[in-house]
Image 1: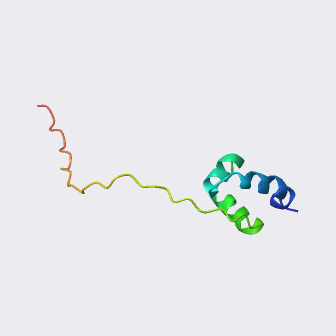
Image 2: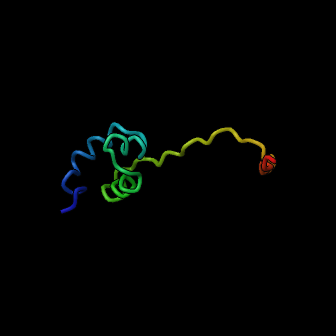
Image 3: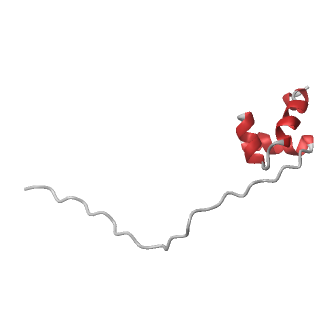
Length: 72
């Protein structure tokens, strides 16, 4: 048996108090890949949280650094 099958009742209990996959991953200390797999296999029905991006910035050119001239 796999760990998912062994801990299915425990995982389902934790999933009831979670809104998203991210919440469950934090509680279990699992990676997102494993948590998504658990969500699919156990049919937990948790939403995949969309992380909010920071504000957009305008692209601008940055001058290349100049090599230091050797001291004579």
